[in-house]
Length: 204
Image (cartoon, rainbow, N blue to C red; front, side, top):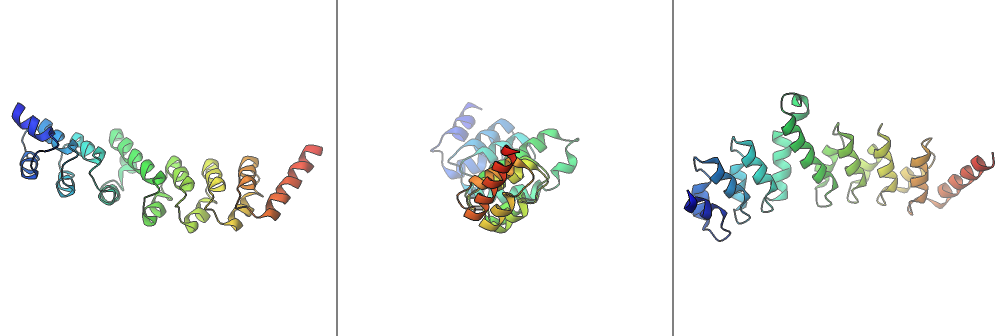
């Protein structure tokens, strides 16, 4: 047992040894392999098929797992998790954690951010709206989001298109309007109009 664990944990273990231990009958050994940063991307991808949830968690936390593999696994395997929240709350927590990190990651592909912008969890949409690499079309969509904090994040995003910022500066939500007016990409005319509106409010 100790020898197998040591081999599974050691960063210089041969790939062939890790591949063999990835199928070990002891889940603790498989967990150790899944956490080993020297495990190959191909092996980690294979271990995502393991039926033991703790092993999947170890794989997802492994820095050696390619971001693209993580994103694809999340979309393919966790798309319906929100509808099963009452049955498995821990899985929902894992889903939200993954999606939240992907939403704020500037390295996430545009197609993934577009998907996450439609997520029912407002925190995830807020992170997408704050992401500087978020596509402009997605920011335009999120500028109309029903969640106030999502709109505020769009208003503060310097990638947001000037016309959208100008519209947000006229928002009835004073916090959103203020944030948009302070964005350097907001047209000068819109910022001036907001300042005049504020001055009129203060005087009356």
